[in-house]
Image (cartoon, rainbow, N blue to C red):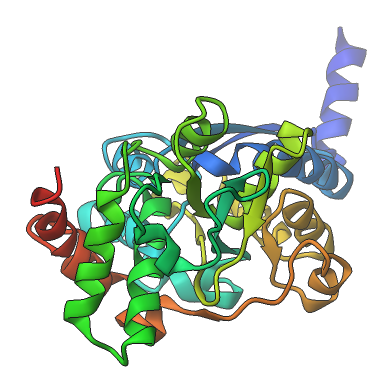
Amino acid sequence: MKKLIIVLAAVILGGTVWAKEITLLNASYDPTRELYQDFNKEFAKYWKEKTGDTVIVKQSHGGSGAQARAVINGLEADVVTLALAYDIDALVEKRHLIPRDWQQRLASNSSPYTSVIVFLVRKGNPKGIKDWADLIQPGVAVVTPNPKTSGGARWNYLAAYGYELKRTGGDEGKAREFVKALFKNVPVLDSGARGATTTFAQRGIGDVLVTWENEALLALRESGKGEFEIVRPSITIVAEPPVTVVDKVAGRHGNEAVAKAYLEYLYTPAGQEIAARNFYRPRLESVLEKHAAEFPAVKYFTIDEVFGGWQKAQKAHFADGGTFDEIYKRNP
């Protein structure tokens, strides 16, 4: 017994550090399921080699706004990887879970990958859909989720609205009428982006799905039968889904260092390759160039350029009584 005590003391005094098992929770939005299943395995391998510790990353998925509300209401997420900055801003405004300057802590406004809004049509493009104006034609059934509940849907809405603003030299009235006409052609409003993809691709509803490029490319891969085609419009919006450590939660868990490293790994060449193979556009030009065939150049605008950022866009278009409510209440 004395020998055992002496050996244990020697190990402790010698500074031996036992490997730990760490659990992280990533609260994300619906279309990132495949991305983070892939990424979590690679990060766990990297962290094990670097520190000897085992990291288990659990995932929570849902609509971007719903995920933000869940964290505000007590979901113990160490990191959030959501569809738009406005949803992460809510963690500041409602619970002070992160600092107000959270978007400056990582490169590219804390958005390690991007996507663009495109159209997914059925084989042969029977309705001849080429650009946004085709979506308001009679007899064209458009599938897009509800902007009141889906972050992805808000990007879709703003892409259409911005297109008409660009086309008409900034005419807000014409942009409202254009989006109103588009939503007249929407037969069902799913609550989230993945649900809308299911409605179009599996339930066979609609002639065109307005969606993120990554969802369209995933649908092409999963169908495997040439059932769908992607149409990239003449101009679109670039979607910039952001990420952040939830400081107060990660702090309580003692996970600050690994949570920070987890998000930083998204920016590495390895992390960017994972984003690309899950159909998100990587930020690193060297990685983007390797996947140029999958991600052709497109003409796009940013939310800051056309709408003055997410706070202004949310208030004007998606808050109660905003533009979307005005056009949709007359458009049941």
